[in-house]
Image (cartoon, rainbow over all chains, first blue to last red; front, side):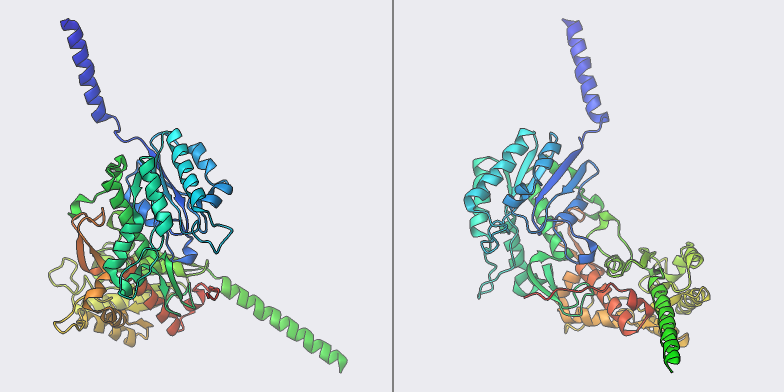
Length: 255
Length: 259
């Protein structure tokens, strides 16, 4: 009896010790799938920035980021172009799949990318179930807001139908949800109609050599806007208490 | 008559070939643009993001013939930059046609800082940067220190580098160096944004907003991505206004007209 107890105690003690000495954090990959608001851009298009770019700068070395988002893609074309299957094939247990689509799915006037609400829902469910099949963790993200204000100066919803579908799917399938649409509407409201332009690709003619004619874009972000959106997603990770939050680098010195 | 015509056209052909070849060679010369200065210009470590030095976006706007080598370092004055052996390697690497963009002042002008540099030494150090660059046939460009965010009670921006900015201008005039008056131009920009909105240009963060600054941050000297990009745009526009050869290395983008 005592012998067994001793053995047991030793074993537990050893385990406790090991848990301190062994690297606690398993390597994980965040796979990002989505559209132009999330994707990586070449520096030739600077300051055009997808929020996935600054997002990748806030994790410790146990996290790898694979930003597979592509401009112009809807859930439907992302799948039909065979961009999803290779990700499924590479998913490992504990990996994350951050899913943000909607801008192109909802664009009825672009038949090449348009996805009906029913198909949009089906595709999201496919991303979720196939991620879970590989013991990866899907995270649904509602499409980040466009910059649109009403006459009273209120930031208005620009993805009504498709954001609701994301929320519904998250509820039905018990998937972590980051309601980036809502969060970014609040961010735009905080900046106000005029200053929220600073978050987007808005350049005067002659201001920036890469856009000699200027640009007036209320969908795509500049470096400043992309970082603010990335901050919202990082906050969303914490709100959901995802294990991933322990891998975000907090600079304690700057407290 | 015919023969002469033939000869002339041959000569013209030859001449234009030579001119074109020269032109092509000139176009292809690879140059390095060295940035020397302080934290407002420097590349940042990731942990300091979103603090951004204006040298960071400045990298992006040139064609493939230009390498931007940002040697600026946080906290440095002209004196400590030299004392720490940061200048000599730049001189050693300089080639004909390279540029040296020089922006100091923030750390030179504060008597309580370890990096303090007396006005007379600041001038001497700037002159050293200029003459040693020129001795290697490189092209120095003097830049006055970029503005801090400081407003008086009426909402008018205040000059925070008066003495040292003037010293930069004096050296530029004395040695006939191209000058970018970034102090004045950035003050105009900050004024245009006004006392409240100018915070967007600097590294202002709310508590809990950004993991790198969990307690929030309020910095009236160092830039956000937005401010850094705007400052870089000022410098780029001045490079064009000054007709520096470097202007021909700024990437030409044929932007599609958007509806």
